[in-house]
Image (tube, rainbow, N blue to C red; front, side, top):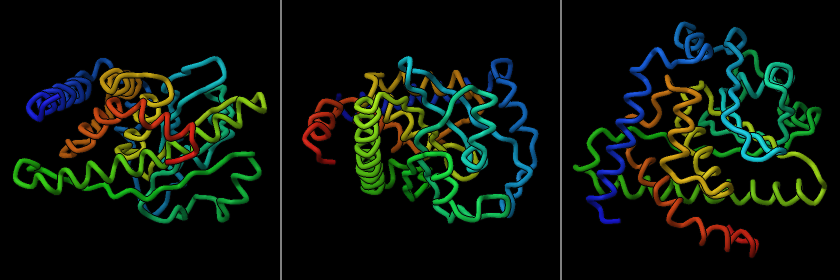
Length: 244
């Protein structure tokens, strides 16, 4: 795909995101709750538990999305969604210790028999990528590098789950539930592990959470997701050889 074709593809996905957000009739009950909630980032104690089941790509695998509050309430997710989370992927730039969060995350995840993968990925706004193409490309490369590392760790956990005949239920979350970085790695995992196209992964996300409006002024994320699809075979070969 040429640079022009990629730009056209990215613009089409931005239109999908814009249309989903503006079609308020398609919003879910969770979308309505989140849009009406007054968030205080000094304390998450009163935040709604926003865990969302995005899909079950296989009988024994689930992919979920949420905020830090969802990660704090794995028992509630199990009760409400019928899913016992086995892996939590945290995409947080800040420390995961606001008021209302567990005082010791290691003990908390151990009690729930959960594998924790944590990545601090910069969430940069780039309103005029055409005027800063080099920065756009650098951010795109950073996304790909971070996503590949996380997907490799998830790949390893999926192999363990198969060998031990256990399910693989993954919660991807960011801090506040805006779901830019966590939604992106969720889509990347669907592309790599379950052969989704980048377009289909994004559209599935928008079907489940139409009000998210992810990646505004972050076209580099969309370009990177398209590149994951192109590099999928290469990534899988690397993973099979134990390399990220």
